[in-house]
Length: 90
Image (cartoon, rainbow, N blue to C red):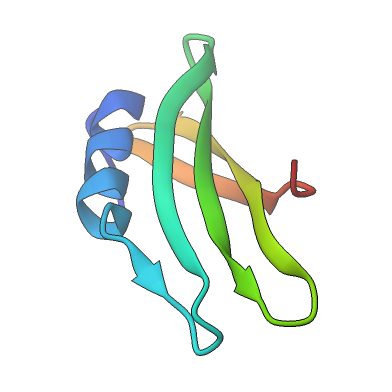
């Protein structure tokens, strides 16, 4: 699906993924930020960061940040996501 710009991708990503989610173990995942981290005339790098927190009976309270990177490429009909990579938790 083409996007008008990398900023348009960020706005749509927030709209689709901006709600908190809770998994079957009770961990809450919250979208923290979505930003255009780098841009050239034909490509863009977008970083999304999710904050995950919860409580495990055997381990106690925990939190982590899960970063995901998207690479967008400009085509004649708009910007397209050409790759998505989940990075190690922080």
